[in-house]
Image: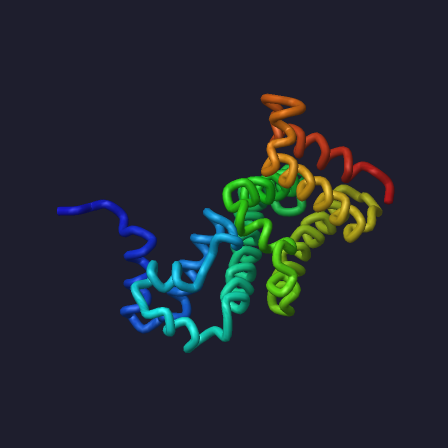
Length: 208
């Protein structure tokens, strides 16, 4: 008996044949964009993966960008879920939890480079969609929540919004440098997780 996990294509087809064409198409698009980037994505590709006709997507989406906007939304939801899992493992409102959140952000970016670039503006007609923006704000809001709790627990009077922007700026920059291979060229063997831990501790200690 074949005990191998079903392939991505088989999973998409299974969803479709259970009547969930919309989700099957988004699932296929998500995997393709995460792996290969939005510039290499076409409606024909996801139709082939889901085993449907090239006309099928238009029952649910007006065009390619509308599917990509759904992909971005799921990307931010997944990023938030990873952050929440990382924080739960280390403690809500703790330095360790906030550090783990930053590390999970970079891990998500590196593991889903094509998706990450799309989420942060590679295609403005996708990343500027209201639903995408709101889901991104929810993700950032979780960071603000954790830093607020940390400040309250530690007796600090830092502005959580300002501290969150500082940390986001750092981890987003670190993610971009990793994806572009800059760290490897300048500081081969750099321990990025340790770098994030050190930077997080320093940034949270800084006055606003």
